[in-house]
Length: 208
Image (cartoon, rainbow, N blue to C red; front, top):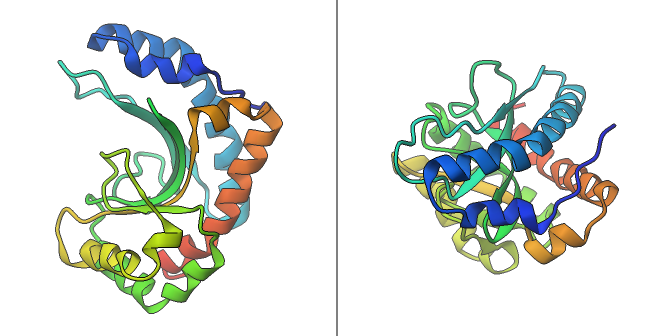
């Protein structure tokens, strides 16, 4: 298995001015790592779930002016796309790395998914306080689960159910310093450990 070592150069891509210039750097510096991660973890999810998973690397194809502020590889059991399904992601903002399970607004069944989560809120007790939750995949900020358990967690999932643009992400963040301090083997083990913790939640989301 190939491993991925993160460097400050990966994160500095998001400081580059200009759409073409940033996209060129993303393509040459970051995407090769997403390809390795994509192959590794699509195999992992296929084995763990019994469904064939496919990697989807962000193309940012619709952009004509503004350069992307983040980029990622997503995993879902559908070859042609992932946005309409609950999925997993590993990606970078200019400030941190994220490893998450996500339901975004394109998912047509998100109200039913939210209901299943609301009935099984105790599942989140299995996650350590360092995990984070968010209601917007377009924003880098997230709430620490240790602080969100009391009210915010339920509010985010209720919003996922009731609001058309509602979303829900849960996972872990690594600061630039944390991500770049990890060896390649340490990072892949950390990512697998994170996904291992998120799989029971994913199974509830899909009604498995």
